[in-house]
Every structure is written in C-alpha cells, then in structure tokens.
Length: 186
Image (tube, helix red, strand yellow):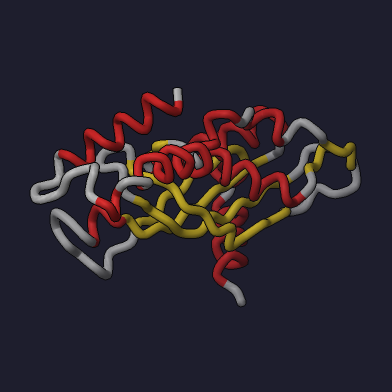
C-alpha cells in the first residue's frame, strides 16, 4: 500500500509545472509524504466510540463540564490543504462522566481525516451524545482554512465558527449562554 502512495506522490509532483519527481531535492519526497500521510490521516484507524468507552459513574455531578481550547489540525477534503483551530466541548453529565483528555482525543480522531469543519463539529457532538447520553452537549469549533487564505478568495483574516447543540443546550437558552460565556473567559 505504501508503494502505491509513493507512486501517487510522484504523479502529483510530476503534475506541478516545471517540476519532475526525479530532481535531486525531490528524490526522497514521495516516501516522506507517504509516511506523513500515515501520521496526519491516522484518524481512520481510530474508533471514536472506543475513545469514550471508559466512563465513570457519577450521580453527583450534574453540572456543566467544559474542555476548551483543544488545538487541532485537519485537512479540507475539497482542496487537501490544512485547516486548524480550536474546539470547545461542554456537556452536562447524566450519571456518566469521561476522562477529560478523552474529549481532546475525540477531536483529534476526527481531525485526522479528510474533513469539512461542519461535519467534524457534528461528529464530535453526536459521538459524545451517543456514548455518554448526557443531558446536553455543545461543541464549538473555530478554525482558519488555508483553502480560503492561500488560494481562491485569498481572504487572510476570515475564520469559521461552527457549533453543534444537543439536549438542554438546544432547549434552554440559559445553558447555551453559560457555555458560550465560559469558553470566552480567560
């Protein structure tokens, strides 16, 4: 399989006007890119639900839990260039909690795939909702897309914010307001 990826990178390099894959500086590039793809697209090898699989019973904590400023890097499925930013996740437990690092791992799992930000936001929220069955979950992702900054519109200042809202965050504006206020503090 790695050999097929190496050949694919050689074809891609050969499609760049004025370049050729057997130029000295590019001789090892196809192998490096193939190995890099194993790393940056490793999310396909991860099971998102298994990441949240180990939970802890906690009947006492029914208040908002937030992990904010989760850095991530992903790749736009339309242009295969990076987009990157921060995710903020909040949920209100319904008798079950999960280790906080697992929420960051879940973001990483979905980010390490060809993605669109809108789908990634929904995937994170849906997985938390399905596995933890919380009273509510809210995910906000803020990102910069290189496909908008370095090509096409070339808008260097634009960023994109997406949200997914489930349960009490959808039904109770006060809960949504509390989450949004707390992710902006600090």
